[in-house]
Image (cartoon, rainbow, N blue to C red; front, side):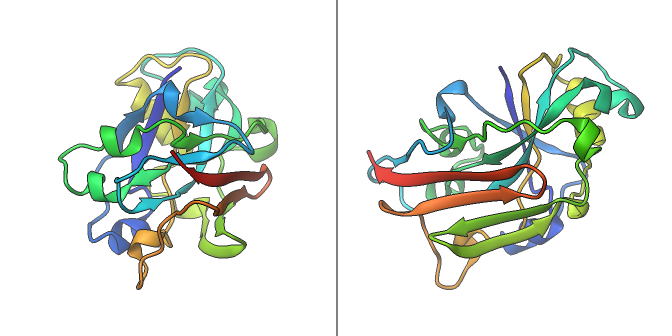
Length: 209
C-alpha cells in the first residue's frame, strides 16, 4: 500500500501557512506504520513540539493503472474515506522535506467506511470538518481543492503505478491549529474528529508515548 499525500491543495490553507498555491500537486508520502483505525490513539512522541491534525478526503484506488487519463480516473477509484494527516510542525518547518514530520507511528488515522464513486462522484462539494474536543477548527469544502480528485489520480499515476489499496490524501483546508493565534497543538487527553459529508466521522483520542 502506498500512502500518497498532497500538500497545499487548498489555497486558503497554503496562505495561512505563509505560502502560495503550488503550480502542480506537491506530493509527499507516509508509510504503513502511520495507519491506525477509528478509536485508536494518536501517540505523541515526547519532545517533538507542536502537532496538528489535518482533516482530509482520502481516495482509495480499486483498479490498477499507470499513466491514467484524467477522463478515466474515476474508473480506478474504489471509493472515499476520512483521513487525518497528523503533522509535527516544528520538525516539518526545520527540514527541507516532510517525511519525518509526517511519518511517526499512528500519524495517519484512517476511517473504515469506504463510500463508492457511485455515491460521491468525483468527490467534489463535500464539507470537510475537523473538531478538537468538540470545537470546530477546520471547516472547508472539497469544491475548493486546487487539484481535483480525477486530476490527482491521473497525475500521481504518471509517477507511480497505482495499485488496489493505494491511498491518496487530497489535502487539508484552512483552520489548522498551527496557523491560529494563539497556536493550538494536540495534547494528551484530546479527542480529534474528522467529519466528511457523505462518509462519516473518524474519531481518535490523543495520548503521549
